[in-house]
Image (tube, rainbow, N blue to C red; front, side):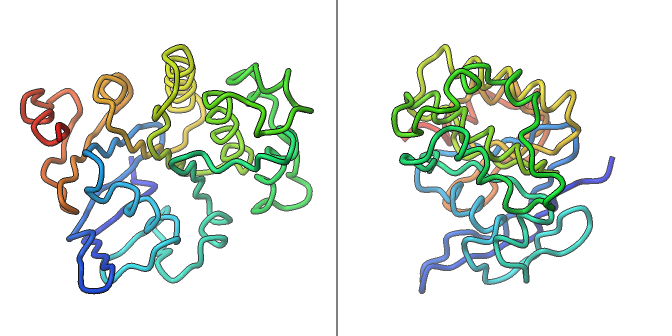
Length: 234
């Protein structure tokens, strides 16, 4: 199957410091590619480079075979990139319904409805449509952030540490939602994680980042636990 996302030789600098060094990876429809690494190794920077929130110094990013490196973030969203940032970044003063409707931005007017299967994935959101986003628990906000990205019907979904600071029951629900999307929605999923057990359950392929470079890339089931933990433990 052809890759939905291809990142090739990506370089990114903050001034004189190089944050990403020749990073390459792919994400295929119906599969989960997981980027693992400890804090500060460039995982979020990589996600932001793919979605257009950080300017790259070199390399290529293609979506469905077409380069997106010259497109601003909103055009990449329109092209089919959905992004759930680290820290969720929902609108605390807006209701759950209004937060979901912010996902309409890349869509044509006729497509601006919230798909019902989003409430099948996250039933709690249906019960809380009139509640303000800021009144939700951290785990509920994370579900809302994922749902908001899905409203835009992405071809590629990027999840930046969706388990961070979340209670175990909701981690399980998020894992089940990702597994459902992988199997039934046909979208490519790029999952950025530190939580190895969560990643192992879901990932088809893995890339491990260390100091801005990919130090392992391959099939998830071929991971060597000892080697992986060496790159994840501070």
